[in-house]
Structure formats: C-alpha cells, structure tokens
Image 1 (cartoon, rainbow, N blue to C red):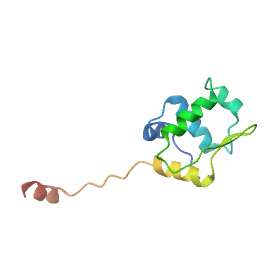
Image 2 (cartoon, rainbow, N blue to C red):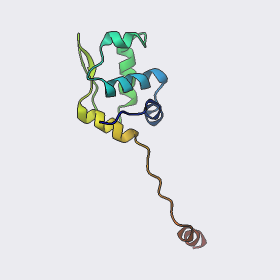
Image 3 (tube, rainbow, N blue to C red):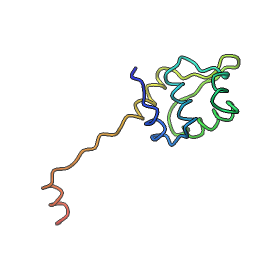
Image 4 (cartoon, rainbow, N blue to C red):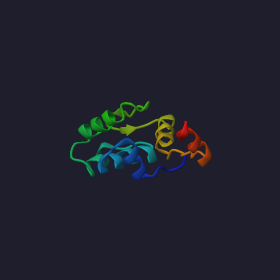
Length: 103
C-alpha cells in the first residue's frame, strides 16, 4: 500500500496538524498505542473523538481496544488513501467551451 502524504490528508479532510499526524500514524502503523498518542496530544481519548467526528462522513471505522490502542483495517486504510488522492482535472477543448458560451 502506498504511503499517504500527511499534508494531503490534512487538507483533504480539514484536519489540524495533530489530527493529521494521528491519521497518518493510523494509516502507516499496524496499531497506535495510547502512550504514543500522549506524546503528541494532551488527552488521546478526546483527540480521537474529534478525529472520528471530522471523519464521520468517510465510510471507515477507527477501532479501539483498551490496553492495546487504536487501529484501522486494511480496507479502511485503503479507503482513506483513495479519498486523499488528488482529483484528476479534465479540461475541455477550447472550441467546445466557446460553443457552450455562445449558445
């Protein structure tokens, strides 16, 4: 699986630096321990709640297990990476655009 760009993740999903870093960790690691999250945020539980809230429209689940940490399935990781890919812009030929404007 291709590694996502952390800046693109933050931009695409409207995340702060810390939330973007946590999402990146979830995508690149098998699981993320609560102690790892404590190194970058004051309250991991609240921070994960905020991340889930911002990603509520994305069809993924961030799973948790006490004494283990947080993780995402490979399918959910692939979904996030696919959604974070840049959109392909298709430009119409100039002639067709001029015809559309003149009608």
